[in-house]
Image (tube, rainbow, N blue to C red; front, side, top):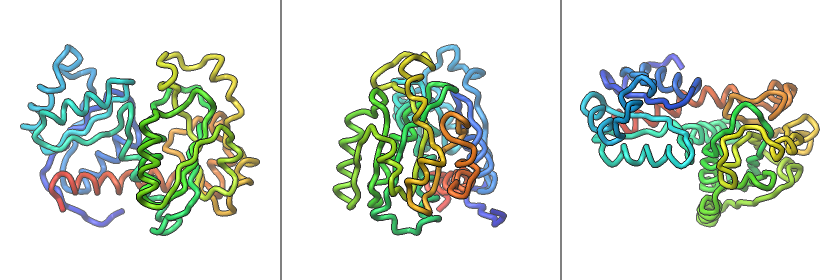
Length: 292
């Protein structure tokens, strides 16, 4: 922070958002400014695509106006396909700001934070991705999906814990296990949250929606209500290693996903994790937009 990094002078990145954003939008806007460029924030409800303009035409035109197009579209079975269609036609980089399957910017910041706190050699760290109860909205699966694919590539022992019905796609688990086999990590699935916390070096207790098994957009139903005990508490954190990191992409559903005593306590790295969204966003833009 504070060190000039004018790697992309006068370059423009378009930020297309189909959903709300705090960390993603502001890390990209601040990041491109620090790189010497400029961001155009595009609320898709005010664009012609709200009248039916295609991703093809949008990508071609914006490519002629700037140097990269970044997009968030998290609608189930729509978002990733939309970004890929834009990528077919764009002549500038297409950057994912999150879709229904992936959140690469968040996963990179998570990895950076783990390595900052635990060292560059992350082999054999027990990292637990744990479903947690929340009622704010039916969240995408993109954060845990991206984490379970990325972390085994750095030799981490990943435990994915969730109640029955909140599965990730089978192909994701297959690919994660292939990554683990190549890089010396492991991937374990469990429906026991205590097992996930026990001796963990890093925990990510976060809600995600039951999209794979249940495509309903209903936020709270009986199945969800039955899982209120899936909550990160001080008692569960006592099962983890003494120096265990509590991490969360934010915003956390305080009181449901996690106790205040945990997220505000000594194990929490959430604000450093959020800050690293800026640094990793700058790195991605510099590498993809020609600033290296």
